[in-house]
Picture (cartoon, rainbow, N blue to C red):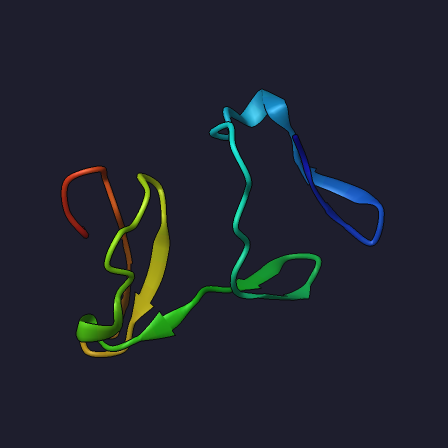
Length: 71
């Protein structure tokens, strides 16, 4: 499995991507920038997977889900 943008592999299996169907949300603005999904603390995904990232506008920072909680 690989994430490809315009035919260029940006993430491949050597990066330990979980198996299953990937879900990509956010917008790649340039080759070096990813705009993360964002919203308030209350709008964080209810059933996240380990490794999900989210820009929390309530806190004004990026948080990630570690398998137990958003940190």
